Each structure stands twice: as structure tokens, then as C-alpha cells.
Length: 412
Image (cartoon, rainbow, N blue to C red; front, side, top):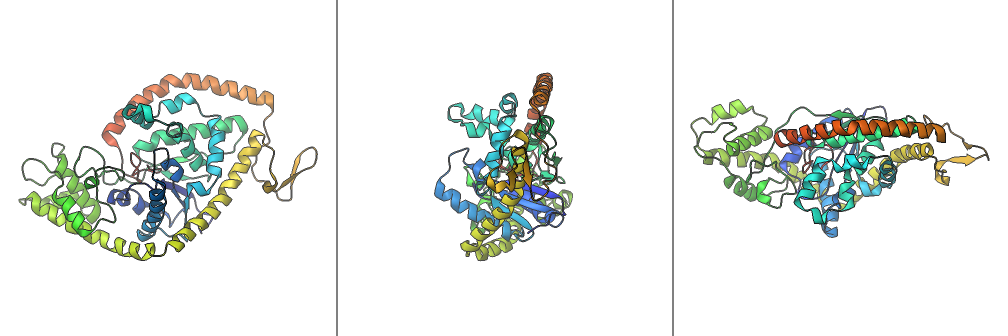
């Protein structure tokens, strides 16, 4: 298990859909690199997953499948912590406390929530509305130094920072304020059938993406039918979204530069290029699939990985939750390790950096200051949201893996 001397990195993915090549390029590859230098927490966000209906048996199956794929792609369960969100009660416990300081107006302005309401306003649940608060709890529980995100998750990360700052302003320095981290730019992979839309592991059309477990026959068929453009020139061009996407995919898998690929295929047709790309992907996926088959054959080991990860995650998260509970004035339970003298709470061990509860008068003054500041920020936030929505339409990133979050830090 990772040591405390390293900076802490947290990233996560919902165990839904099928992990795809975009997830590897945008997230898993970065996870493998970062685990060498960071105390790494890899979260399977099953609580986030049920904000939309899930088949229970499929959710369980996918959870174990994702763990096996993490390991097959090079994530090391001895160097990092792989765990299920639902195995650590502190996530929902902290989420409730944060709900009590999170401004409702900010949640209503969240771009992803507004988009989903626009698609199906009659079928929206409170969990989807409250998604950013639970995500904030996920991050703040572990004192994360590094949370890899892309443009489509920056808004949620900014929300997390604001909620943490507000809580600290009210109750003392309880939370570490996480830094937004965008990994080096990666390939922005679009759908094979709809190259105007980002490749998504939860796409209902499985022909729109290449899954990490797709067989060679399936890969060849998907690439053969992938959308190209009029003409036959193999080059990246804003007017040629289909072939541009395939060139980007080729570059992401091979590591070869786009210009080099264009030069090598000059004068050749789409059919040959797509055949070669299919074989390149098959060769790339082969070792991952071989390791996966061996790892997935031992589901007991996969459950043990999750249980071991959850034990460590609970230990880390409960320390933070204890600090939060003391700050807001909750009476400690017997598991807290402190006893009551009749006047104050005592401990055999020093409780580091736990703020003394704020007096009612001071708390009232702080709340008044916070409310005034929030009122002043509303217009600025609304204007920023307009800019953010425009940016997301043109520059949705592929850095860490989500569904609009497929390639960001906390994915869907």
C-alpha cells in the first residue's frame, strides 16, 4: 500500500459501460505513470453510477471487470489503493455535511446537470442534482493534492474548491484545498460513427468506440465501418472530421506523430489506412486482453483487492471525517478515540490540526460574510458559466476518462 510521504492523487471512474481505448489513452496510462510518484487512490464510483438506473447484477459484474482491467493495464494494487466508493461510508457522511454549506444556486448552474435536464427533465433525480457535492466529498476526504481533470470537469473542481474554502472560512482550516491538475494534452478521440461527438464508454451504439475487450474480429468490423469523408486524402483537417479522428486514434495508439502518419499514407486510400489501423489496435490490445483473462479468472483475488483498498481508504477518510465532525460540533462516538472529562474531550494521543469549534457569535459573523460574498459572486459565476459552456462545446478534453467525464478525473 502506498506511503504517506508522497503527494496524494485521486482519480475515479464509474463502473458502467465498457472501458474503451479512450479511457486508456486519457486516464489509465496517466494513472500508471503517476502511481510511481504519488500516493494514488483509484475510486470505482458506484454511488455516482446509480444517479441513473443500473441493473444490479451488471453493476456488480462491471465493478470486478474494471478492477481486472485496471490491473491488466498496469495499475499496481500494492502501490496504489483501488476501492469502491460504497465501501467507505465517510463519502456519504461528508457529502451531507457539505450539502449544508453548498449553495443551491451553484448546483443549478452546473453545465452537465443543465444538459441532462434538457434531455429528460421529467426523469431527473436528486442524486444527479447533488452529484457535485458527493464528488467534492470524494476529493476532500483524502486531502488530495492532485486531481486530474479536463475542461468538462473543471466546473466541478472549482465547486469543490469553493465549498472547501467556505467550510474552512466558517469552521477553521479543516480541508486541504485541492489543486486543479490537467495532464499533458492527449488525443481527443471522437466517436467512430459520429466524429462530431466525443467517444464515450456509455454510448448506446457500441460501434462508436473500441472497447479494451473487443475481439480482433469486432475491431476490424468497427474500423471498416468507421465514418470517413468525401475524397481519399489522409490528412487532418477541420473539414474532414472522420479521417482526422482516425488519424488521431492512430497517433494515440502508436505514439507516432500526426505529420509522420500523413506523410507515410500520402497517396493511399481510406480502406488501406483503416485496415492498418485495425491491426495496430489489435496488436495494442492483445497483451492487455491476455493479462485480463488471467486476472479475471480469479474473482476472489479481485474482491480482496477491493477489500484491502477499502480498509486503507476508510482509515484515511475517517480521520478527515472526525476533524469535520468536531469542527461542526458533533459529539464524538466511542470509535473516535476520545473521552469526555465533563468539560472537554480528551485523548491519549494528540489530535493534529483539529480546529477548536467556533463560537456561535463568530460563526454568525462568518456566515454573514460568506452570504454577502456569495451574493456578489452570482453575476460573475453566471457569466463564467456562459464562457465555460462555450469552451466545453469546442474543447472537451481527454485527460482522465469520463463520459462527459470519461477522460477526466471523476468520470461518468
